[in-house]
Image 1 (tube, rainbow, N blue to C red):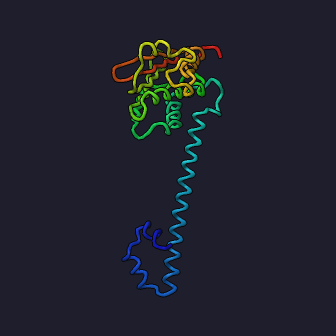
Image 2 (image 1 turned 60 degrees about the vertical axis):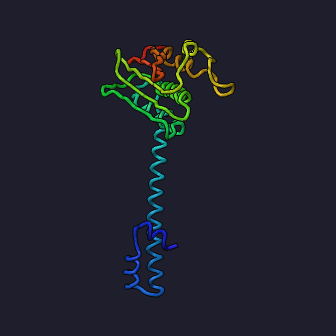
Image 3 (image 1 turned 90 degrees about the horizontal axis):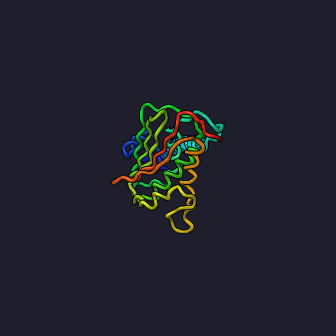
Length: 224
């Protein structure tokens, strides 16, 4: 087909008429086919280039999220870990989900196991999304505090009762239906933050959002 690539490139009827004035018969047909084929090839090459870029970006995100090229304890940029986690979970953040990033300007890297921290961010963001359902606001905040970093994952979901808040970090405690959750996400997160990184994790229920707060020290001193 000659018409679609010509139209996509912006060649209108007036352009075709000018070409027809210069060429005729088989020469006109061959000329238009050559132009159309060239445009189709250019379009295909552009699509291949864009696809390659997207694949490269995806590989970069997966590599950053999995931390597969890093040792156990490294200098970690927490912003990078949170951003890669959000990118990996983009399929769960629908069009009706509003993500707000509040990153302080004075954030320094900390000593931590980046892969373990990404597991924590995944658990907390997953829970926040489950609480909001189809729509809501997810707030991700990082700021410097007490010779370390304070990370907040807030959601505008259904909130927590006092009973759920009191037992949220208990092993196998879950409010989900049978078969939909193990009840280990927050327990594992607590172990990683408190036992592995000498940090703190807590829950705060506010009128407009539920906030999971994680504090991590700048230096790593917990046993591995």
